[in-house]
Image (cartoon, rainbow, N blue to C red; front, side, top):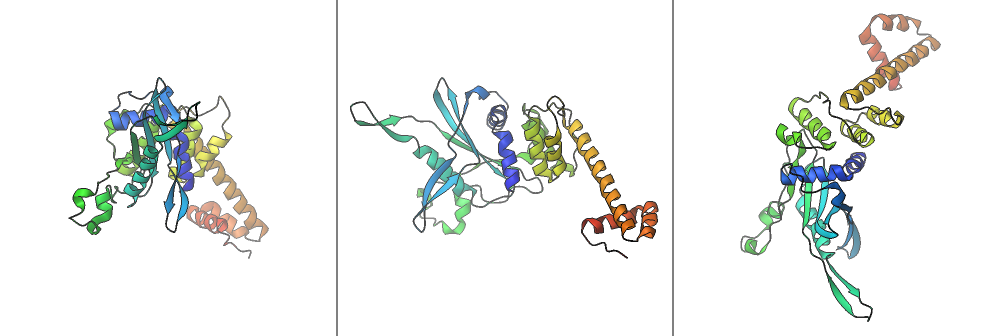
Length: 300
């Protein structure tokens, strides 16, 4: 999962993508947040655990939304590929740390200590990237606690719902409102959820390398990463149609090399009859290739 987390953050951390996600999911596609109003946030904080140890907790991604040097809000993303029961606990920890940061002091030129007054809301979006099933875990503190929460205490225990967005379950209209490369990611997840297949759109890709890295992580197909590594400046694929053409060509090239290596192995190990049979029987060739890649073929 680590590669997927990194790839998600690499794309989402780009300001135009970050702003687009916030504008679409929170403001129904209205451009409230502009990319030049975003500033990197502090994603690492600490807490005291049991036994008494100071431990780090780290958000996936966060940015300050600023206008005229005034902080309007602090917005964080948490990416999840599997539903998790503890998400409300984690969220309240992240948000609490961000609010605690707003209680700070400075010393003036006379050595007097005074409180720095800076107040802004904290918003966390949980972006669920799974498409095979809906989020079926706790969404609030009450749901996490379940029957552990005494009814007599309930009026005094603050519930804490998470802001959950199931990307694969967005409507087509919601996907169309994305203006950045995140539209490509959302469209892929929605298509896979609906049909378990993918037809590439013709939308222009702006951040090619980041999109290809994320597609490699989502599909577990390293050919996307290979295309990203091998592409030269000025020769980047313009859309997912071109990307899949290159991915497919890499697959064909690799398939030809695998077959050539297999045939050489068979000849070198006295299995000329298998060479003839494999040349005329595709299913037999596929079995030999599988055994060859798995190191199961032996010399006669």
